[in-house]
Length: 463
Ligand code: SF4
Image 1 (cartoon, helix red, strand yellow):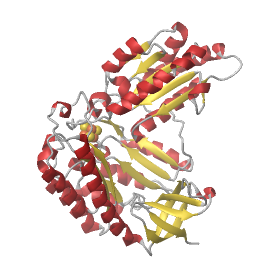
Image 2: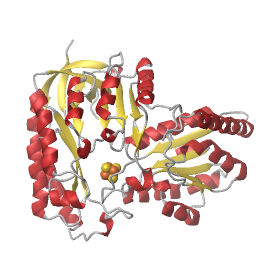
Image 3: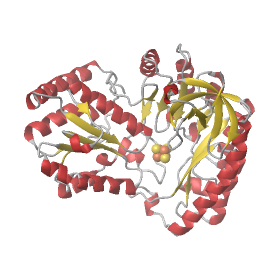
């Protein structure tokens, strides 16, 4: 359901005006300053940009360190338990800031703030925090801040998913050439190791027109890369392949990427759209998680190794070098060494350009946290190393297919520790380093690849 959305926007605008007025009275000489930091996935970073957009409209400026702020907001991630511990550590350190400046407001939001145990712990232990709001409360940001500033009391908002998506809120974007655009939110899958469905709610998709309008606006303002986001972006309810084709029709010189895709919804139609849309990057990040059907079932992933390989094979039948990358969990509860070896076999069979592998880490609140886990951390670490060695050999061989070819790269940053070098990604999403100045950042370059390293390519600009 979409509450699209005039009444809701009017209400939000009234709340914004009320907060702006209060801020002007409280800070008559200057604008109040906010330090907002987002942790975790790109979806969370994108939410942080939207929160910044709202705060900017209310009258806040932004700073890069917590020390100078009137308002601190930590936009948290709940995927790993140690990420949560880190947040509590940081909040603990902020106590002295609050002691020095009692007017300071400290808030936490995001996935961790949606969990009821977080509210309990904040209430009992972290008195310096005055604002806790979960992932469904963003539209009430102005009212929550108004309440904290006028009554100086702890505000906790962990409202449940109402299924609505509010359109028309602006964002403060960190990049001037690469923009993330959320197309759907939430997840219906309940993979047994994952907390996301409990803190981000059920899947809901923006309309194709809303996404089209946002992307068109970004392209008109000069953006060169659009990253479409969703917990399972290809489960987009109006048809993800159709959305790619619609966005591909927008005039302009830009590249469309997307993440993350769920293998259960990776169809031939999706591959066809990627292959046939000239603006869509020729790669697919398809998290397989493991190469053993028994473990996939325990993970509740809803596909088999055979289903997965069929999609890979179809993509390669359309483009021989179609690029795949993936996520892998090593050492899921009950996994045996033989089963782990099936994952090694799978990565050899697929030939990934890149893998992101993690040792399984227990997440309380999930089904997997209740499973018997007999593998020691040390063992899991050894398996992970074995997997990475396998991948290193595979990827260097695979990446050498680009040597001698000229590829188009969107330059996105300096190479840290390598003065005079910049880097970016080619259409397959592979990092390409080249000699060049920072002025190139934000532009496309034709680059001849001269060397394949095991994680990136080295090239030179073709004039
Ligand atoms: S698909 Fe699985 S891993 Fe991905 S967000 Fe949903 S539950 Fe988590």
